[in-house]
Image 1 (cartoon, each protein chain N blue to C red):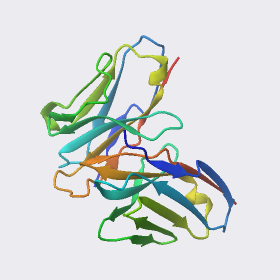
Image 2 (image 1 turned 90 degrees about the horizontal axis):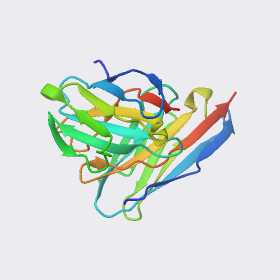
Image 3 (image 1 turned 135 degrees about the vertical axis):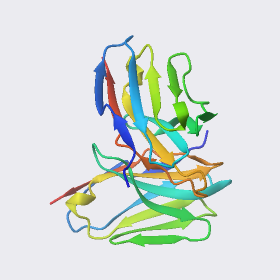
Image 4 (image 1 turned 60 degrees about the vertical axis):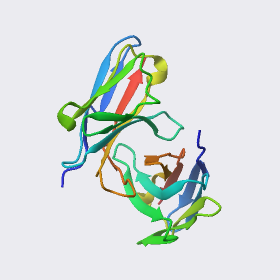
Length: 115
Length: 110
């Protein structure tokens, strides 16, 4: 079974530039998550999708971050414009809708450096 | 905001040493406790899902215990090996959401 795919793996941009990350979840996983992990902190949930609908985006900085999950499969997360404090690893995860323990399967992440 | 604490923040041991880490979390409304192992440049990998019905799990040299009433979990590694070097994350789940701790970074020297 293929795992969660993410690209790019690494990205370096200057502040005020835009960047987009892509995620392809495990086939059949209806729920998709984007996390931000800043150095020294635990992963923080940015947004959760169930199929192509948003379940929770309460911690997404909506003035600069946006995410979509067209057709309920792949997802993209965009930052526009980027700030220095956006430097982090962005993790995508997916889970089965009917998993009662909400076990999440993670991709390798995208490490973003904003200079 | 739910506070999940892990200690120590980092640990450096010699090959063959046994070690343990702690995860403490608010015990009310929690549904399950997840442990993940995250090696540099790889995907976080699920180690255990600990439920309210079971308080101990084991996989090879790694085991974990859970105290649901007081809200803490211990992860034990017996006879650490260099390949155990990673960050170990715990994440209790509340209302279908995982809340991650800051992790314990383990380095095992040969």
